[in-house]
Amino acid sequence: MQLADLPFDIKKADANSVWKNCLTIIKENVKPMTFNTWFLPIRPVSFENNVIKIQLPTQFFWEWIDEHYNHILNKAILNVIGPEGKLTYVIADEKESESDLKISIAKTSEPLPTPTQTIKPSNGNTSAKDASYNSNLNPRYRFDNFIKGEGNQLARATAGAISDNPGETSFNPFFVYGGVGLGKTHLIQAIGNRILEKFPDKKVIYLSTDSFTVEFVEAIQSNRVNEFQNFYRNIDVLIIDDIQFLTGKEKTQDLFFHIFNTLHQSRKQIILSSDRPPKELKGMDERLISRFKWGLAADIQPPEYEMRIAILKSKAEEFGMTISHDIVEYIASNITSNIRELEGCLIKMLATASLNSKDISLDLARKIVREIASDRKLNLGIDDITKIVCEYLNVPENKVRDKTRKKEIVLARQLSMYFAKEYTKASLKTIGLHFGGRDHSTVIHACSSIEAEAKDDLQLAELLSKLKNKIELHYK
Ligand code: ADP
Ligand code: MG
Image 1: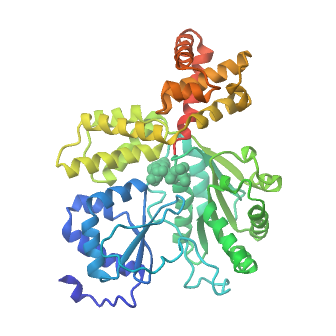
Image 2 (image 1 turned 90 degrees about the horizontal axis):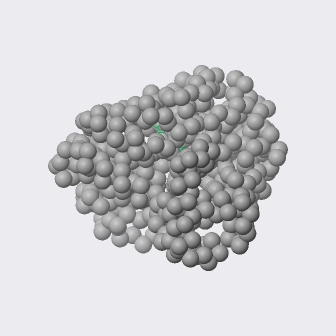
Image 3 (image 1 turned 30 degrees about the vertical axis):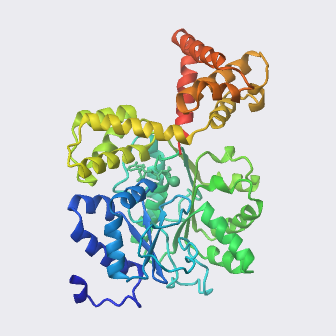
């Protein structure tokens, strides 16, 4: 057995060496393509009390590995850590979704360590990089694998400029906004990775707004708010993802406001992402909103057709897949508003094909595109749709459930019904009930009249397409 040759002592091991040893075993047990696709993108996060924590790019990755390679993981953990070994995972840049792996050898009844994805303001030694410092950056997110397109031109160019001169450009803060799965996290982490490459002494920290909030609450509970604040005031590049989740959290906003000011005054770089532009952040302190506009706010738009093709081709190459042009075109024509879904589609095809030793065919592509569409449906409720439609038409949401026959309310109601039918799995009856207890024939009537009118009424057709884009941006 190879392990015996390695100078490896589990008692002294860190996450990297434990995971490296696991990979050695996994590699012996799976095909190279499987190894490259499913195991190489995994990143070790921590190793404490016999628990190795790994980070996976998406939830789908986890489900796939859990379903198909659980026994191999089991074997690796057993061999490397021993019978007390346990594994937990987190999903990159999503809310911490820690869960126990169903590893049969996991017998320890000790509580799991608290999530450690974020750094701890530990020993007050903030003047130089210390051992406890962890940038939280995922090395997978780089500029060289970030594809440029019309939709991300400004954001990408600005990101490059900031990486050359962090804190020294007028793009401070850099505020990137746009819909789900369009590359915000990728881009802001690529900046962090590039800065660390060029300026290894700089303290770069990436964290989600949720982690920031959780850390703050923990700091309050343990009476360490000052320490917490000092820690963040000594960062050179602070990258906070999904800042929209700070809305409505006044105390955290207040604290962040002070950290922001200190950093900005000392010309430290601040990078933020959000699903909407600063001015639309309802429930955010005006003082913060105005600061978000100090530097540059750049949006990322959904990828245009050519870019979707480019993304599919480059990702296929990255995954070592051969895939014909007509399949690429088919996917690019059917998955239109989300890069994460394009990537997910390839991964699913690759996985299905490699598991069944089949080629990647157009039929398979069709099947997977359908599955992705139905996953979306699960994620969107009638209320979500109504909200999007009403916000867009500037109609109060509760009115569409009333009996009102005012023209704009009727339109909002009919559009909401139409999209609820298109985008959710709800039955016509359920949809009717959502709109003030109307019956299913009303829903049918609404849908067919919208469809019929859109054929002649260009304005309505345009409205439909705008709303469609809006709704698709809300896919989780
Ligand atoms: P967001 O944070 O906007 O929701 P992510 O940054 O998580 O989106 O991107 C979703 C997925 O799509 C990631 O795997 C990312 O690497 C990939 N991706 C997004 N934009 C690009 C791009 N321009 N080039 C290559 N991959 C991209
Ligand atoms: Mg993100």
